[in-house]
Amino acid sequence: MKRVNFETVNDDVKGTLFGLLGISVEPLEEHGIRGRMPVTPKHLAPHGYLHAGAVVSLADSCCGVGCMAALPDGAQSFTTVELKSNHLGTAREGEVLCDATPVHLGRATQVWDAKVYAAARPEKAIALFRCTQMILWPR
Image 1: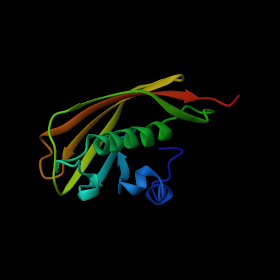
Image 2 (image 1 turned 180 degrees about the vertical axis):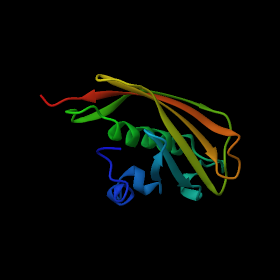
Image 3 (image 1 turned 180 degrees about the horizontal axis):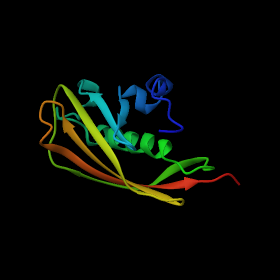
Image 4 (image 1 turned 135 degrees about the vertical axis):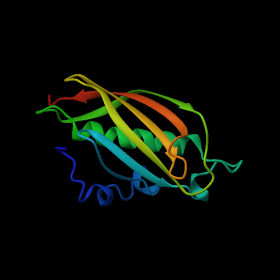
């Protein structure tokens, strides 16, 4: 995967939301990304369940790393222009994982799908996520 150095990517995000949430990523398939995030009290909503914003941050971060890795030659960067999530479950402890895979890798946009699930129950989705990224080109 070009443009993403998986030897350093998890260190490069320190101080960002990605890093503050404890998200780490690794390659999955040719262009796919697997992300991990611990579930700690800082990831929970006041009612004690995993905060939807933490779930969306995990999924969007994984899709973003995938998009960066799959940018067309000559592209400068990307920005997320649309995202949607369906929340189907939750977690209160342990670790949640996210598998992000490309649906469309174009020159103007990319579309990515992601499934977030508890490490202890990979068969049950916590959330399904889809996002569209606009590819940014130098002026």
